[in-house]
Length: 83
Ligand code: SF4
Image: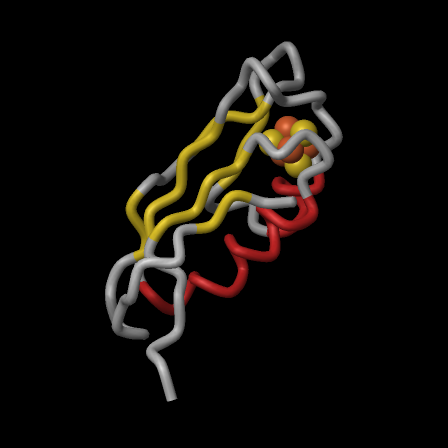
């Protein structure tokens, strides 16, 4: 399960991403999902290229967190407003 905040956010609010390189197993799904946000160190573990992102990247980083087999990606500022 990915770790995603349930706090209310407006769709235009920035999204914040954190990675835990100690948990990373170097699978690389995050890099394939968005190589402008996620990179890999020489050892193959995740390296965050940008941490605070525009709301337009919310869905792609949320997808990266969901795909990470090590649950090493944390995204905050993702919840849609209530209907
Ligand atoms: S998807 Fe997860 S395990 Fe794979 S490189 Fe990215 S952070 Fe590491």
